[in-house]
Picture 1 (cartoon, rainbow, N blue to C red):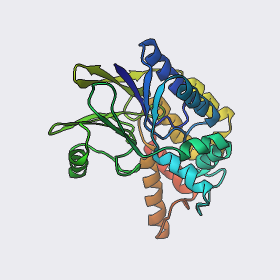
Picture 2: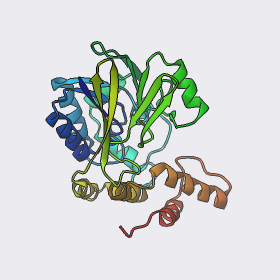
Picture 3: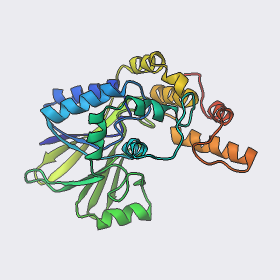
Picture 4: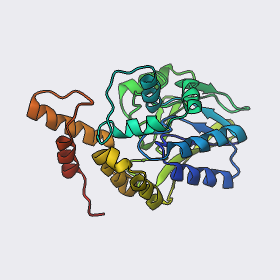
Length: 288
C-alpha cells in the first residue's frame, strides 16, 4: 500500500496538480493532506476545486493548518485589519475575498490531528504543525519535539508547517515532514512531498521533489494583480518559487525588527511598507 502525503499547498494549484498527477501515475489512490491549502498564490478557487475533486474520487484524509485558522477567525469577526495594497495582509484579504461558502464549511470541518490505521500497517498520526497546535514547529534535535514524539500514541508522525523535508528518529518513533507543495524551502524551487510505502509491518518513506511550470503560477501572480494587492509579500513569493530560498517569515521578522528599531514598537499587522521594502532589498538577491 502506498500513500501520498501533501502539505502546505498555499494556493499553488499548478504545483498541486503536478504532484497529484505524479502520484496517480504511480497508482497511488490514498492521500493525506496536512493543511495550509491556501495562502500566498492567486485563484484560490482552482486549488479548492482540485481538493474537492480529490475528496470525491479518492481515499483522502484532511487536517487543518494554521492558514485555515486565519480564514475561520476572520469569518468569526477577528479584529485584525486586513488591507489591500499592503504587504502584511494583502494576500490574506485577497484569498479571503475569493472564498466560497463551501470552502469555509470544509475548513470548519477539519480537525488539527487524526490517528489513521490502514489495514495491517502501524497507526499514523497526521498533523500540520504538531499534534498539539497547528503553529507548533517540530524541529530536529529539540527537547520539545522529542517530548511530543514520546507522548504520541503512534510510531509514525507526519507533519508539515516548516516547508522543509525532514526525518527525525527518536527511540522507536519516526517523524516525517514531506516539505511543501506550494512554496518549499531549500528545494531549488521544486515542489516537494512524501510517499509512504507500506512494506510488511512498516512504513518506508520516499521523499519526492519534482519540477513543474513555475512560470505559469508566477504569470498568474501578476495577471491576477495580487502583486499589487500584496507588493513585497509577492516579491518574496516569486523569489521563493524560483529559488526555494528566503522564507516569508524571515523577511517579516526583519521588517518588524527594522520598524521596532526606528519607531520603538512594532505590532503585527501594522508594518509600514518602507520596512518591507528595506527588508526585501537586504535579504533577496534578484540575480537569478
